Image (cartoon, rainbow over all chains, first blue to last red; front, side, top):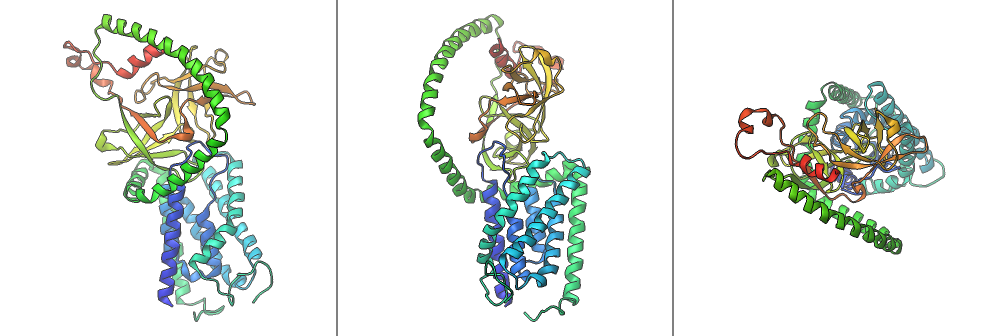
Length: 174
Length: 301
């Protein structure tokens, strides 16, 4: 069991690394109207909602702090918020254990919106230079819409387990 | 897993809570520290980036290639239109070529009259872009030259035509370039031909805003925007772009550098101006000029 857990953690880390590399690979340097979605948060939430033991808080903290450094974000703020979000999601895991995908998507959407809202609020509070708010709104939306993709990706980390988790699109508890 | 609904309130659960709280506080402390003592944390950031990016560069290559293929494919679709535009442009360029030849002759003559010797040192160092900023909210690139190559913070980076950004961090073999479009980027400029001073401020759009523009009545769309050299870290007279006006009537800058296809950057060496003040530097038969201003001075004529 423990071996399987470590394997899943490794897979999660590797996938995160690939996403980071994809995001920082030099591409069009013009400012984009649509920012890249926060894929890693979606993946993390999807994995937690399917099997919370896979992601200890320390792993999440390391990966997101690393992202803060690489992405030129204010160091520590986003990772701090993500720690809160994921810990909250872990406490809610039992509530959503048997429910279908759409319900968890809605739940994740609220978590994502709350997280990014807090983020921008703190940026304003600490007077960190930031872009206009509409772009953050776009970020929230695009992140929410990228959740289903990352839900599919999360099957690479945690295999489908029909007994426990929301592996059907709609339909009640198992 | 033996856990269930009730088993969660156990020693492991409590430990997890404490660990999460500590990590959260740790992150927030870093953030506060970053806000208060930016320079030190940014130095740590560069160390992290420098440890990571060059080592994983081989993994970045396939991603870059894929992206380039996608870009190329997109450019094929409007190749006909492009061809027509290019033909027109060639006509215009021929005219400019004539002008350039004439100016070159004039320049040579003037140089001869002045007997100026240009600085034999390299005027610029070229670097390859290693990585982008991963999010849409910051506009930086990482290049593969650093303090080993003599790069210093504050130097200008261009793409050969126009200014792209400013060096904001230097590692041993990498340097971070903040693009003009970043929200934290501010560069002192002058608008030609009126000579009005202003600050070009990025706002995460393709067209940075002109702030603190003096004599704004004399400035109209199409005017050239060049660096003013105020602050003495940025070379004077580098081309940035042209003035445009947005629908709100705000003056913005259409950047000359081709941001959509940045691959190599030129970092302009800035000779320290203090050296000229020393008396020994002025004695002797060679008077070394800051070449950048000489070159651009001619171009501005």
